[in-house]
Amino acid sequence: MNSCVLIAEITKAPELRYTQDGKTPLAEMIVKFPGLRAEDPMETLKVVGWGNLAQQIQEQYHEGDQVALEGRLSMTTLDRPEGFKEKRAELIVSRIHPIGLPLGASAGRSVSAPTSPAPTSPAPTSPAPTSSVPASPAPTSPVETSPAPTSPAPVPSPQPHSEAPAGPDELNYDDIPF
Image 1 (tube, rainbow, N blue to C red):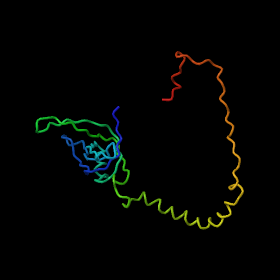
Image 2: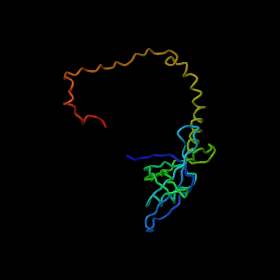
Image 3: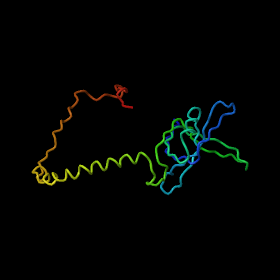
Image 4: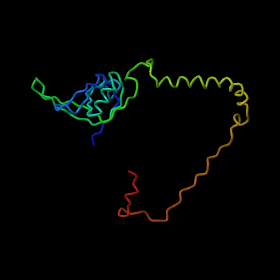
Protein backbone atom coordinates (compact mmCIF):
# COMPACT_ATOMS: atom_id res chain seq x y z
CA MET A 1 0.00 0.00 0.00
CA ASN A 2 1.42 3.37 -1.00
CA SER A 3 0.05 5.96 1.41
CA CYS A 4 1.77 9.06 2.71
CA VAL A 5 0.67 11.70 5.24
CA LEU A 6 2.92 14.72 5.60
CA ILE A 7 2.77 18.00 7.51
CA ALA A 8 4.71 20.62 5.58
CA GLU A 9 5.02 24.29 4.72
CA ILE A 10 4.47 25.52 1.18
CA THR A 11 7.71 27.16 -0.04
CA LYS A 12 6.76 27.71 -3.69
CA ALA A 13 3.25 28.94 -4.47
CA PRO A 14 1.06 26.46 -6.36
CA GLU A 15 1.14 26.82 -10.14
CA LEU A 16 -1.85 25.70 -12.18
CA ARG A 17 -1.07 24.05 -15.51
CA TYR A 18 -2.98 21.89 -17.97
CA THR A 19 -2.18 18.65 -19.75
CA GLN A 20 -1.40 18.70 -23.49
CA ASP A 21 -5.06 18.20 -24.36
CA GLY A 22 -5.84 21.32 -22.32
CA LYS A 23 -8.61 19.67 -20.33
CA THR A 24 -7.11 18.28 -17.13
CA PRO A 25 -5.66 20.81 -14.68
CA LEU A 26 -2.73 20.02 -12.41
CA ALA A 27 -1.22 22.06 -9.62
CA GLU A 28 2.45 21.82 -8.68
CA MET A 29 4.08 23.28 -5.59
CA ILE A 30 7.16 22.73 -3.46
CA VAL A 31 6.86 22.04 0.27
CA LYS A 32 9.41 21.72 3.07
CA PHE A 33 9.24 19.63 6.21
CA PRO A 34 11.60 18.83 9.12
CA GLY A 35 14.16 16.06 8.75
CA LEU A 36 14.17 12.90 10.83
CA ARG A 37 16.50 14.26 13.52
CA ALA A 38 16.59 17.74 15.02
CA GLU A 39 20.02 18.47 13.50
CA ASP A 40 18.90 17.42 9.99
CA PRO A 41 18.09 20.23 7.53
CA MET A 42 14.58 20.83 6.24
CA GLU A 43 13.66 18.51 3.36
CA THR A 44 11.83 19.63 0.21
CA LEU A 45 9.37 17.71 -1.94
CA LYS A 46 7.37 18.42 -5.08
CA VAL A 47 3.60 18.03 -4.59
CA VAL A 48 1.20 17.50 -7.50
CA GLY A 49 -2.61 17.69 -7.43
CA TRP A 50 -4.94 16.82 -10.31
CA GLY A 51 -8.41 17.87 -11.50
CA ASN A 52 -10.71 19.81 -9.17
CA LEU A 53 -8.21 19.40 -6.35
CA ALA A 54 -5.61 21.22 -8.48
CA GLN A 55 -7.93 24.21 -8.87
CA GLN A 56 -8.71 24.19 -5.13
CA ILE A 57 -4.99 24.10 -4.27
CA GLN A 58 -4.21 26.99 -6.61
CA GLU A 59 -7.09 29.14 -5.28
CA GLN A 60 -6.85 28.46 -1.54
CA TYR A 61 -3.18 27.82 -0.70
CA HIS A 62 -0.21 30.16 -0.85
CA GLU A 63 3.48 30.27 -0.05
CA GLY A 64 4.04 30.06 3.72
CA ASP A 65 0.86 28.08 4.50
CA GLN A 66 1.30 25.03 6.71
CA VAL A 67 -0.71 22.06 5.44
CA ALA A 68 -1.36 18.39 6.07
CA LEU A 69 -1.06 16.43 2.85
CA GLU A 70 -2.46 12.97 2.13
CA GLY A 71 -1.52 11.06 -0.97
CA ARG A 72 0.88 8.59 -2.53
CA LEU A 73 4.59 8.83 -3.12
CA SER A 74 5.76 8.60 -6.73
CA MET A 75 9.24 8.47 -8.28
CA THR A 76 9.96 10.23 -11.57
CA THR A 77 13.05 9.75 -13.71
CA LEU A 78 14.55 12.74 -15.52
CA ASP A 79 17.19 12.65 -18.28
CA ARG A 80 19.84 15.18 -17.28
CA PRO A 81 21.83 17.15 -19.89
CA GLU A 82 25.01 15.79 -18.28
CA GLY A 83 24.09 12.35 -19.65
CA PHE A 84 22.71 10.58 -16.58
CA LYS A 85 19.25 9.89 -15.22
CA GLU A 86 18.02 11.48 -12.02
CA LYS A 87 15.24 10.10 -9.83
CA ARG A 88 13.06 12.45 -7.83
CA ALA A 89 10.27 11.78 -5.39
CA GLU A 90 6.96 13.63 -5.61
CA LEU A 91 3.76 13.40 -3.64
CA ILE A 92 0.57 12.91 -5.67
CA VAL A 93 -1.87 14.56 -3.27
CA SER A 94 -5.41 13.25 -2.80
CA ARG A 95 -6.40 15.50 0.15
CA ILE A 96 -5.01 18.70 1.60
CA HIS A 97 -5.88 20.36 4.92
CA PRO A 98 -4.75 23.77 6.23
CA ILE A 99 -3.32 23.54 9.74
CA GLY A 100 -2.06 26.95 10.78
CA LEU A 101 1.26 28.70 11.28
CA PRO A 102 4.25 28.02 9.01
CA LEU A 103 6.92 25.70 10.38
CA GLY A 104 9.38 27.67 12.51
CA ALA A 105 7.09 30.73 12.77
CA SER A 106 7.42 32.97 15.77
CA ALA A 107 4.85 32.83 18.54
CA GLY A 108 4.05 36.52 18.08
CA ARG A 109 2.40 35.97 14.71
CA SER A 110 -1.29 36.83 14.77
CA VAL A 111 -3.63 33.92 14.02
CA SER A 112 -7.29 33.59 15.00
CA ALA A 113 -6.90 30.17 16.68
CA PRO A 114 -4.40 31.24 19.42
CA THR A 115 -6.41 34.37 20.24
CA SER A 116 -9.52 32.40 21.23
CA PRO A 117 -8.02 31.04 24.51
CA ALA A 118 -7.02 34.58 25.57
CA PRO A 119 -10.60 35.75 26.36
CA THR A 120 -11.20 32.66 28.47
CA SER A 121 -8.27 33.40 30.80
CA PRO A 122 -9.79 36.69 32.15
CA ALA A 123 -13.07 34.91 32.89
CA PRO A 124 -11.56 32.53 35.50
CA THR A 125 -9.62 35.40 37.09
CA SER A 126 -12.77 37.44 37.77
CA PRO A 127 -14.44 34.67 39.84
CA ALA A 128 -11.16 33.96 41.60
CA PRO A 129 -11.35 37.02 43.94
CA THR A 130 -14.90 36.13 44.96
CA SER A 131 -13.91 32.52 45.59
CA SER A 132 -10.74 33.52 47.48
CA VAL A 133 -12.77 34.65 50.50
CA PRO A 134 -14.51 31.28 50.99
CA ALA A 135 -11.32 29.48 50.03
CA SER A 136 -9.64 30.30 53.35
CA PRO A 137 -12.20 28.39 55.49
CA ALA A 138 -12.21 25.46 53.07
CA PRO A 139 -8.70 24.16 53.95
CA THR A 140 -9.65 24.05 57.63
CA SER A 141 -12.49 21.62 57.00
CA PRO A 142 -11.94 18.19 58.58
CA VAL A 143 -12.39 16.43 55.24
CA GLU A 144 -9.29 18.03 53.73
CA THR A 145 -7.05 18.08 56.83
CA SER A 146 -7.55 14.52 58.00
CA PRO A 147 -6.95 11.89 55.38
CA ALA A 148 -9.78 9.45 55.11
CA PRO A 149 -8.83 5.79 55.23
CA THR A 150 -8.98 4.41 51.75
CA SER A 151 -9.24 0.84 50.75
CA PRO A 152 -9.23 -0.43 47.23
CA ALA A 153 -12.60 -1.31 45.82
CA PRO A 154 -13.18 -5.05 45.70
CA VAL A 155 -12.37 -6.42 42.28
CA PRO A 156 -14.31 -9.49 41.24
CA SER A 157 -12.04 -12.38 40.52
CA PRO A 158 -12.28 -13.88 37.05
CA GLN A 159 -14.43 -16.95 36.86
CA PRO A 160 -12.67 -20.08 35.62
CA HIS A 161 -13.94 -21.49 32.35
CA SER A 162 -15.40 -24.94 32.49
CA GLU A 163 -14.60 -25.61 28.84
CA ALA A 164 -11.35 -27.14 27.75
CA PRO A 165 -9.09 -24.82 25.73
CA ALA A 166 -9.86 -24.83 22.05
CA GLY A 167 -7.42 -26.61 19.81
CA PRO A 168 -5.98 -25.08 16.64
CA ASP A 169 -8.76 -26.65 14.57
CA GLU A 170 -11.44 -25.02 16.73
CA LEU A 171 -10.31 -21.37 16.46
CA ASN A 172 -12.98 -18.92 15.43
CA TYR A 173 -11.18 -16.40 13.24
CA ASP A 174 -14.20 -14.08 13.30
CA ASP A 175 -13.43 -13.28 16.95
CA ILE A 176 -9.98 -11.87 16.14
CA PRO A 177 -10.25 -8.04 16.33
CA PHE A 178 -8.47 -6.86 13.16
